[in-house]
Length: 162
Image (cartoon, rainbow, N blue to C red; front, top):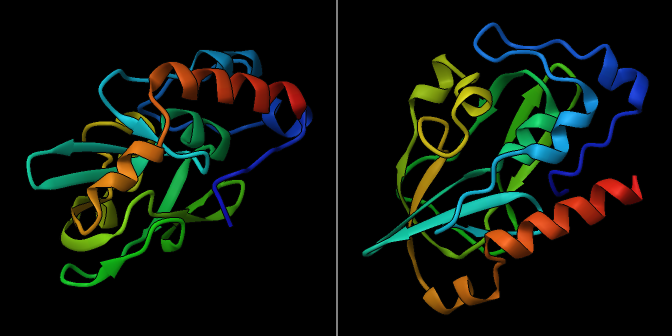
């Protein structure tokens, strides 16, 4: 299951916000951060490829739709991930959602801070809230992912359809 959590506008209006993140109106989700230099999957995960390692997390758009993250389930380092298959889960005050890997490879590091402070995904989805680091087994898989402009358009179209 991809990170596609679509709450009704009523549920969105009643959304609880974390203490570290100001509450925004439901319209604010159109202005989620999308960073240049990252690659994005249509299941709302991001990848930052630097040298032999790719860092993976969920996007600002995804965490905004999820609401306050209260628990994160991650795999162990040393395992493998496969493109478009789940490697973990994020539980929020709204729902639990699987997290898919945008690329295949060996997990070389897991963000252990998330077990004690899962809200880092809300407050810093592209920095402190990263989930796993992977040594890609097929770097060409990165080419099939979206850039910032494409992902922004994708999110706008997806939000308009819901």
